[in-house]
Image 1 (cartoon, rainbow, N blue to C red):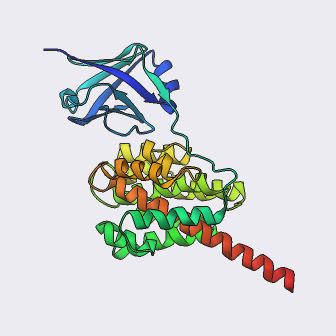
Image 2 (image 1 turned 30 degrees about the vertical axis):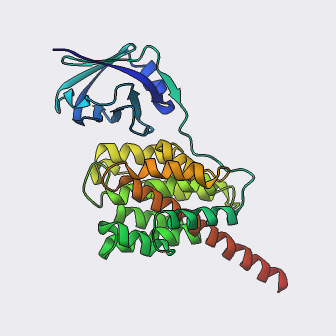
Length: 303
C-alpha cells in the first residue's frame, strides 16, 4: 500500500534547498503521526501535519496526520517534484513559501519590549522574575549548571557581553531530553529575541551580531541533536517557529499574540513553553540593559 501526501506550504529558508535539489539522498531520522524528520547530510528537513506550527526547516502537508508511515532509518530521495521514501510519496506542486523572518520592530522602543516580556510571563501564569519563572517551569534549567547557564544568558543580554553569551551557551546547549532540549530552546528564543529587539533598544548592530554568534556554538553537532542544531542555526539567521514571530512582534495586540502563545504552548512537552519564557527573559533583560546604559550616559553628562 502506498501513501501519498501533498505539501501545502514550506518555510522560505527551505526554498533554495528544494529548488536546487536535483536528486538528494537522505535518511528518515524518526516520525510520529504529525511529524517526520529527514536528514540530508547536515540539513534536517521536518515534514509536519497541517495543524503543527511551521518551523523554519519544515514543509507542511495538507493532511492532518499519518506521517508515522515514514520509517526511521529508511532511505529518502528528494527531487524537484517531491520526495519518496519506500512507498511514501510527498509532492509539492502547489506549495507556497511562508516567511518566518523575525520582526525587526522598527519604530518601537525599549519600554515596549519590557512590557511584552512582563505580559508574556503574566499570560503564562509565571513569576514576574524571568529567572524564577524559567527555573520553576523547566526542570533541567532550575538547578546546578542549568540555572547557572540561564543566569549567564541574562547577564550577557543585560551587559552586552558576547564572551558571557558563549559561556552560557556551553552550559545550556544540549541540556535536557528530547529532540530539542530545553537549553537549546531557550538559546534559540534568546537569539531570535536579540534580532527582534536590537532596534527598539538601540543596540549597536555589530554587538547584537556578536551576541547572537556567542549563543550558537561552532560544535553544535557534537553537543546536541541534528534537529535542535538546525533550529538554533535558523534562529541565528533570523528565522523562527511561526507562533514565535507574533510573540516578538511589538506592533500587534495582546489578543493576537495571545492566540499565537496558545499554539506555541502545544508544541512538544516543553518546547513551546521554553521558547515563550526565553522571549520574555530576552525582552526584559535587553530593556534593563538599555536603561542601565542610558543612566550611565546621563551620569557622564552631569560630570
